[in-house]
Image 1 (cartoon, one colour):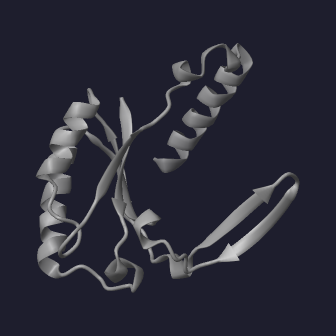
Image 2: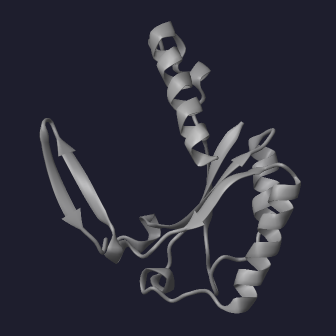
Length: 142
């Protein structure tokens, strides 16, 4: 199963305070372990929400909202995309992760939908389209 591992933002990450060298080294070592285990598919840190935008949908109307966004506990400071055997395995890896922030921090794990999760709503035509787009996207990364 694939899962997104979400590092929640803090006041410091939202203020643009960069991690110290020690944490960067610890995270680098952890990421190396994920790669060696064949788990890491992608992972990045994110700029503060002050540099972000949101687009609110209301029917056909689109409204652009400039950051910063106020609910720090709901914001994301970074993420990984992992391929694991189970949610339990993902939890065990997160427990081994260095604390991503000084003091309190929270990491959320969310399973990614797979094609079969959509049942009959994902018609054979839509499945072919999804497979074509995935292969084109993967080819561009190389």
